[in-house]
Image (cartoon, rainbow, N blue to C red):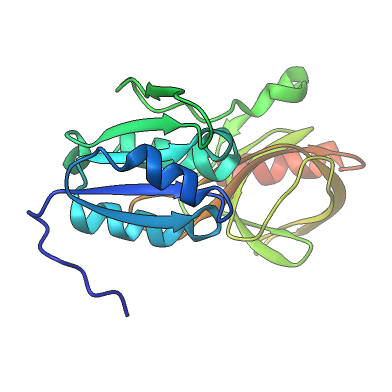
Length: 217
């Protein structure tokens, strides 16, 4: 169990690959306060520390900062009002490279039609409408006759083939699809998740359209 010190005590959180942390620690040594280090594999533990301690500086190794987990962590910090005073820095372990991430609005969610699903009008689904992806439940965000946007706790990867089931009291609509794009997220009030756009391969357009009409917002 982590023994957190006082929230008011100044600290810096440092995140990077385990083999790069020694060099990063030397770069971050001039920063005042306690230094808390996390490997890039412990990004969720780092989030817990950041939310608990409100560090003065959050420093990320620059290669980690551009990975899906790094981008998700940066966006998680940006949308949290309690972390407005935390400065986000991107560092190199082997040079003087350092930049401060601007406090602009977090990056927007990817659009459903990022890979061409604008071929058909899409509709936003009502709250708590689920879809089965290879038998695993995911939230259905948007739907059209050729594609959908989903949010899943299970990992989704671009080009991954999927079996899709749209199920309600009226019908079970089953077909094949593939993942067009994904975005890893770390929301403030839930666990990590994957947002994805999927393209339908052999869906019955009439059946999908009827399901959409029954469940759209």
